Each structure stands twice: as structure tokens, then as C-alpha cells.
Length: 330
Image 1: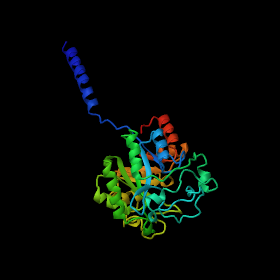
Image 2: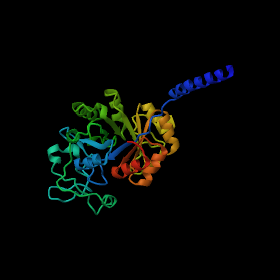
Image 3: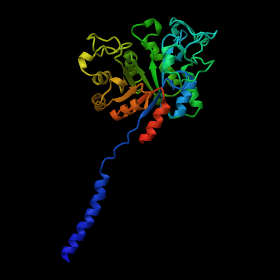
């Protein structure tokens, strides 16, 4: 009997201990992806327009990615370049512009409204790349506040905004000074009470440094590219980069370490420049990794396999379908 009792006692002790052990096992957070609609949904409708952002919202994005520049009368407008792009801009007579000589900083918001940005010139390379984009007439460059109002009126209380400051150290005449740019942007964000739903991003890290000083709770996204058209790191040249606010690759030896030293929260990289080791290094430093711009299922899948934290895409509809198929939350 003593043997049976001791065995039974041990058995019940085991039953008690097992739940306690289970309770002490840490619960791993489920991986979620930040699905960002690039310039809204550029693959579907004209970039950086309210109709494009509406399409992105319908696709179920978590974040609207957009670009802002400043007019002569200090209105923040949503546009990718400091000057009007002739590939997508028509004048009052319906003719596509012939040059990039129409600087937004040199015109008032009212003057800007005379241009139509609802369709791509089909004869351009841009038009061939986005040949399936739906054309519209009478589409104007919106103000940042117009987008904030649209999202508010639509009841999209959870969607976030990734706002890129379009500023370059090479053309100071095209934009306000970095401090003024940030001041205008913060005023608009605070006016709509969106401090907890906005992240600021830029290739030109000066504005990010100012954001961190003036609004330290806002996430800052450091964008990088090593392309022929834009190389803001200047790694191969061996020369100091004027884009990175004094943080140089030669000193830190890796891009994630540069961004960590600069105080950033996110690294947004051109997707071809990412690999598993870089993603792992950045995440171990506490950075979120965003891949831009991925528009086909294969590339999206490759980035997800690397373990990135977010995708920037012109086709959020395709990305949403892929995430559903993989059982990934966003």
C-alpha cells in the first residue's frame, strides 16, 4: 500500500507540475506584416491621388505610403517629385507637359490645381510599365489634409500613414529648409491628432534627425538605395554621402548600424539590396525592416521568406491575396 500511495502521490504531483510548467512557457507573438500601399495603389490608379489611396484602403492595407512637397504658399501637397512629372501631368488644354521645369515650390496651391494628374502618357516608359493603370480625367494634386480628411470620413481609424519628405541636399531651391519642412509637417499631423498613426521617412536623413529632436515619439524610417538614378549611401564611391546627415558607411561598416546610430526605428531598403543576413542584423539591432517596391507574387514571397516586417507595393491587392494564402496577418 505504501508503494501504491507514493506512486499515486507522485502522479498527482506530476499533474500539478505540468500545468505550471506550461504556464511558464513564453508565448511567441504571431508575426504580422505592415502592408503599405505605395503612393496609394499606383498599379491600379494614378499615383498619390485620393482615388489611388481609396483603392489601397479597399485592398486592406495597414499603411498608406505617400510623398509630400511644399508649395510656394507653404501648403503640404502629395506628390512624388518637387517638380511636376511630364509623364503623368497634363495642362489645362489636356496636353502632357514637355519638361520638368514646373517646380511645385515655385507655384501656389491654386496654380497647381490647373494641372491634371489622372493618367499616364502611354508613349513613355512609365506608361509601358503601368499599362494596366486605369486613366481618369480631372484629377488634381491633393493636399495632405485632404487625405487625412478622406481617411477620417471613411472611418478608417486604424490605418497608418508613411509620409516621405521629398527633399534633396542637391536642390535646396526646390524645397523649404529641412527645419521649415518638418515644422509644417508636424503642424498638420498634430492638427489631426495623428501622432500615433504616422511614421516619417526619407532618403535625405536630415529631416529624420530633426523629427527625432522635435517629435521623438514619431517613428523614423531611413530609406536607402544604391541605384544608378539614386545612391544615397555612396558606399562604392568611398566618398562621404551628403544624404545621410553625417552618418557615413565607412565608420559603421553596415547600413543597419548606421541607422541604429542615427536613432532610426525602421530601415526601408530597395528590395534587391536585402538578404537574410542584413534583415537579421537589422532586427537584432531592434530595427523594423521594410522592403520596397515589390509588385509581383514571386518577389513578395522572397521578401516574406527573408522575414521582413513590411512590404511597400504598387499592387496591394496582389499582396493581400498572397498574405491570406500564407496565413500571415497584417
